[in-house]
Image 1 (cartoon, rainbow, N blue to C red):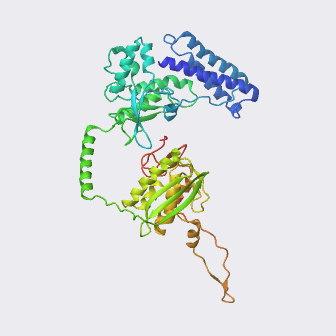
Image 2: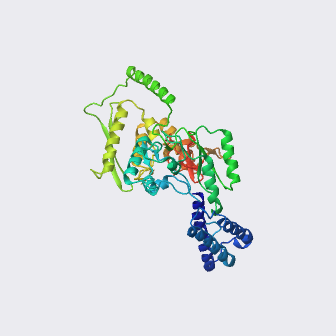
Image 3: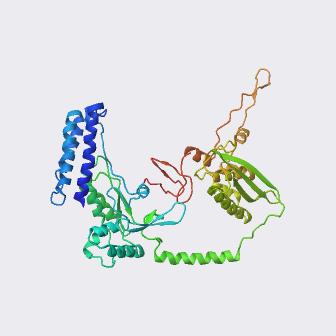
Amino acid sequence: GRAYAAAITAIMTGEAYAQSARIAAVVGPFEAYPKNKSAHDGVMDKHRAAAYRIPTDVVPPTLLSAARQAWDDAVTLGRTVGYRNAQASVLAPTGTISFMMDSDTTGVEPDIALVKYKRLVGGGMLKLVNGTVPAALRRLGYTETQASAITAYIEQQGTIEGAPELKDEHLPVFDCAFVPANGKRSISHMGHIKMMGAVQPFISGAISKTVNLPETATVDDVMDAYVESWKHGVKAIAIYRDGSKKVQPVSTNADASNSKKKVETVTVEKIVERVVEVNRPQRRRLPDTRNSKTHKFSIEGHEGYITVGLFDDGAPGELFVTMAKEGSTLSGMMDAFATSVSLLFQYGVPLAHMVDKFSHMRFEPSGWTGNPQIGMAKSIVDYVFRWLGHNFLSAADRAALGLVTHSEIADATPQLELIRPDRNEPVEPAPKMVASVESPTVRRMNSTPDAPPCPRCGWLTVRNGTCHKCENCGETTGCS
């Protein structure tokens, strides 16, 4: 398998460099090529030499010949005209993009498990079953009936170990990165490293791939992984120990907690239930005839109306959000959302808490609103709760949440009164300058206007290279 991967990768990068040389013949090599010609050509020679070291006894002659010919062309053409590209290839990992492409894996990354569970940002789990198992079984000589029985067993048990009519010698074909929920087999970390070492000679950059270690891995195991990667010529390596994150996006079990943790959770739930029974919140109902406040809004052409029913003391007690296009999916979702918010009002949840949690949630439709208090809205929910905050919260609560208007900032700016020393008369003050007084919350939001909320705690993230990180809990959106 490693020899096949090496040959395919050699063809991929060799053909890329050969084409880069053909482009250089027309438009010239990359800018720094002339002063780096000797070093760059030396790297090309190393790539070509590695293609001739691919084992000949396990790779079809046609595949091996194509890999070597690709690098012969790349080196021969490049010697004459140079190369348009300094680098031609890297290797991407398996991630969300692979799910969007309907691929089980990409690059040289093995599947995490034949049956895995992906945790969704909005809550819930998505069960993913490897779709290449039936094809692999047919390739190994199993009949359609046998393949269907084995596939059904995998979906039911979460592992292929013990499947009916499966031969033991075929088990290694289906080994994955993690030990399955009801199995014992997995690919060792050296299997990952050896595969990376096989294809690294044909990659310009590094390989973006996780080397998975079991939950029982020690510090020495991690050190050994780094040392072996260096010995195999791997340029970069990312280590992940199973269970090292409190919440990991993909796992082999729908409930990643162990049995001990389950017992503790049940005990806590019983205690909470007893407290709730003693201190049940009382619902405060609105009178049959009540005052209300209605506000029309528009977000990038999506018009709607916010109607807030008021208690006798003027506090909000119910919410209606009516979208202009009645009957649409968006309208139905906002009706359901407004009903839940109305219940929160009536059960005494503080409005400041809701504004803090729901403001700046980002999803479409979003855009300019025309409301001078709000300006840009990241979503309808964002607009609704920022408007509620501006209209029903005290000045102190609004300031704590960053809902400060320009007039309030101007009023809070101290002004100096100047006296003419010769006449002891006041000098006419200069025009007022609005100071940029921002609360920490406003400063954080303004510094990251495109940042998504944290998938774990909901806090607004900040940019961290090409990804984002949460300053509240330390979660990242993909980068370490």
